Amino acid sequence: MSIRCDVLVVGAGPAGSSAARAAAKKGLKTILIDKKEEIGNPVQCAESVGTYLLPYLPFKIPKELLRWEITGMYLWTENLAIIKDERGIFSGYAIDRLKWDSWISSIAVKNGANLLAETKLISLEFDGNQVIKAIAEKAGKKVEFKPKYVIGADGTHSTVIDFLDVPKNEVLGYVRSFEMKNLKLKYPKYDQLFFGEFAPKAYAYFFPISNTSANIGIGTIYKNKNLDDLYEK
Ligand SMILES: Cc1cc2nc3c(=O)[nH]c(=O)nc-3n(C[C@H](O)[C@H](O)[C@H](O)COP(=O)(O)OP(=O)(O)OC[C@H]3O[C@@H](n4cnc5c(N)ncnc54)[C@H](O)[C@@H]3O)c2cc1C
Image (spheres, rainbow, N blue to C red):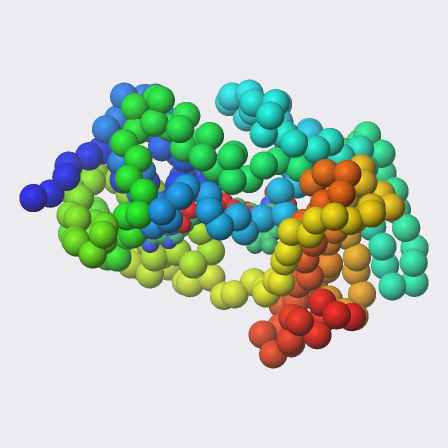
């Protein structure tokens, strides 16, 4: 049996849940699927958001999701030149990304979208340019959708894009990231970015999420670099 809908949104990250919210709000029969068992988990994000972006959102983010205020940013280069910007565009918050993804998907549901977790898109079928079928897998069983439109919001390793006649994204970079606790932070109110040969053609970041914890990470665009070595550096 096929499930008919106007819009099938693949991926309940911020993009997919926002799209599902907007479609459902317009009265379209909207189904939002995500392969994750728990929406937003695991978190793959350093959780920093700029204050200047918040007024552009069509809703107010609950205060409890904005868990730590950031007042500025340090940008460090190898020769230790520092730019410190306070209260400008570099001020913001550490958002609780797990709760944020869950919250924004719940807003989509409140507006009428049907959310199916643990439901992984595996294929799309087209008649010319028109999508006619989407097959997903849920608990080992195939689920068939007949959507009028599909919104591919399934992130950097998109399955949707595999079925489209468009150039595939090349891998943009590689990152090793951690959430660290019980820290003594020198600059707990500042996000910090570090540029140098330790992060070839990318950067390292240190984003506090409380007085004693931070999301930290290091990236590179090169596949052959060992991220653990870069992290040690
Ligand atoms: C290490 C790291 C740190 C970052 N730090 C920040 C930061 O500090 N601030 C910031 O603004 N951004 C940050 N980003 C970027 C940010 O996380 C992304 O821009 C954002 O998550 C993109 O949202 P999205 O909804 O497009 O995709 P995603 O959040 O990736 O959501 C895609 C969803 O699709 C689902 N999905 C994938 N394939 C399928 C499938 N076949 N079927 C069903 N569901 C599927 C996934 O489970 C996922 O839930 C960071 C990214 C990384 C990797």
